Image (tube, rainbow, N blue to C red; front, side, top):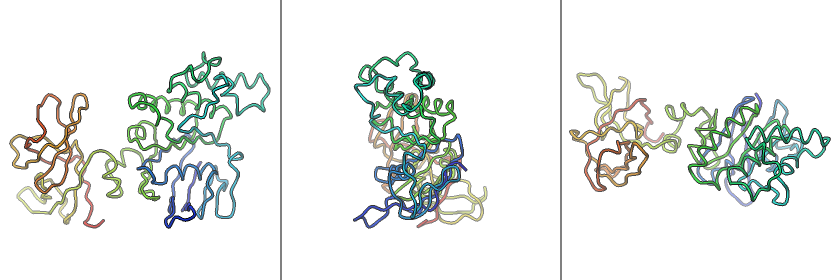
Length: 347
């Protein structure tokens, strides 16, 4: 395994709770891992611990089998062969693009420096920009220069801390796909921090969902979506709601009775809360199960509706943009889950 984090704890003086608590994860060579979660959840602290910028209280971090962090030892950051890309890119405004990229490889002979600069600039699509200055580039191009500079010394691991946070939403999603292509072309192993789910899904082979210092789940995007390990993951990933469900026997077999109708269930089902994604809440004018439209967000061919049930619970639904509902309308809905996900009360 390329990167191994085992039972990691990071504490800050004066704080009663650890910033990172009992976190374990593994990343294979050539894979891109993503840490996602709300602000203050510990994802950047975990990234900094991997970089060697934060001492750890307990646990262990291994890179290619070598212990680089433990409670008794800490390999200095400069000896870890790690490349980092930060939120603000940290480019030197008085240096050209080429000299920015060459900054970390100044120990190489000049001819090798120039060759490597051209290699990485070609990799990020800026092979004709070596003589330009950072202020002459767009935000997306500056981000690529920062990436090229981090790749130039051939690091064994790339760490990226919300590198798109200063860019507009449309550009961020496009660059996320481009970044994945660049990292894969460079055969780089990387750990990426973001709070944006679209970025996480566009980039990550493995995605970790964090909250209050804890890693709830480390899995691929499909598993997170279809098999969330906790209520937090279920609520955080995608647009969904957890609705109370009671097992009932009918002529069609066992079902779960929900506020949006009955759904097929295994015979051994017990009372639970069932997860319904926006794609699993279906518009049905004839349905006796009604909800009041609170908000509608335009998403191209669809709207994302936020609706309130008589119980005051919120549900989400994807509805064709050709349908014209006004905020305040009572709308008929029914449940049509693609993957049955249930959590026991209190789980």
